[in-house]
Image (cartoon, rainbow over all chains, first blue to last red; front, top):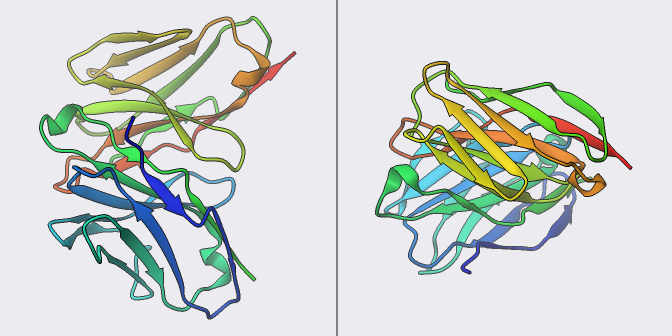
Length: 116
Length: 112
């Protein structure tokens, strides 16, 4: 069964450092997403990406964040200068085409980011 | 804003009992999904129910959807200690990006 993969599973960084979280979505999917979950809270939408551009972003997704699909398989989330409050689990998801309305988003296992 | 909200926030039951969790949302949806998450771990997709479906079963799980009341319920029958987790409902957003909106979740604790 196809799956979304994410690397690394856990990233520890110092405040102010740049981090890049990587995701490999399911190969024939067209929509890609990043979500964030701060410990003990609900999963929050960050950004959606379609046709090589951002289609929607939340208030959380400020200028410190960027996304890229550098090649045909990877989808990355970059945080330019990490803050303590960026510590969270980051989930990547992808979404297929066809009967849009009835397809689920496939979520990756998550990357736990710890900012010290 | 469109949002899934679950109740109760926390539920503690004995092994073998049934667990029912409810979810309400605010706007029209195409589908509603339930996820499970063990503490600090990833999201496990449990079941998707389409807006034109009223009930769906998967093993010990039963999901209902009432679009007139904008609500859904997840029933876990004959619960086991391994069912201890947080359960989230999630709805698709009626925006072009098809993002998923998660509720705050119900923390289920099943005592052995």
